[in-house]
Length: 315
Ligand code: CP
Image 1 (cartoon, rainbow, N blue to C red):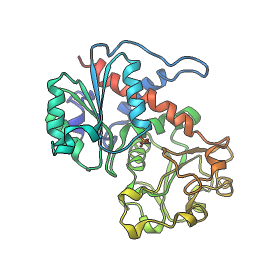
Image 2: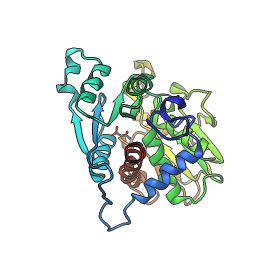
Image 3: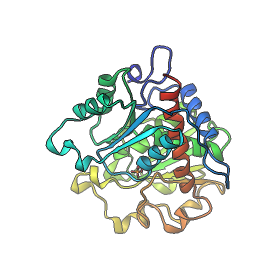
Image 4: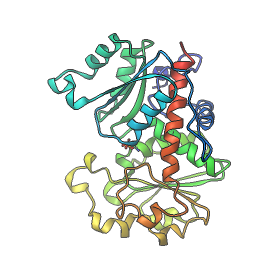
């Protein structure tokens, strides 16, 4: 994977995955993103570093946060933005994703932001584009969501000065979560001390994922510094795997009682969209330990950093 997204000098050509991305590349992107975070009460940073460049958003799966933040990020860097409405595109007439990219490439697109349900598609698209345009993975099946992993790491770093002493619990439907996979890749590379992966028995996480695996959420959150809750990804589950959502909060949701087991200064994260009252109680999602809105804000800064690294640094 690395060969497709970094050139031999280590410079990013595409962003496909956080797996195998060295800590120094992750930290470069986090530092760059931090510089794009506006202090409270200040207007969002803007510049013209991507003036004359064109970014195309191709979302073959629904999105609110990722799509909106990529559009804002590109505009705040002065780029032209094309949001292709897939439901009205020639994809509905059977045009392949490769042909769609090739068509837009002929119109002068410099970067493609692509979300798609097929695992493995993005690497193939990046190989096809090679050096002609950048490919940014905005969500790939159940496997990768690299800009989400970056914004999660950035949010943690804004609250906890060092990764090494931290205990981070990721909980929920890890098996079907590209968010969880990218977070694990980023947090492992950044040296988090203890990574706990808690999943219900109906959807056990892949045992090969690095971390301590739990099926009991009470144990998994004990003395944690960071708790990241995940949505049940019904759209990627067989019917028999879908848990009873009326019972889920009691058995595997983050309630105030469970949160009280974590460290008093623990932060609560969720990538969104949230199923309130299922994986997370309303009072926890909106409570003083929640950093969920900060994650959303950081999404714009991270995507500015990624677009700049891929386009402004490599004309
Ligand atoms: N976290 C995330 O990817 O949200 P969206 O599906 O709204 O983009």
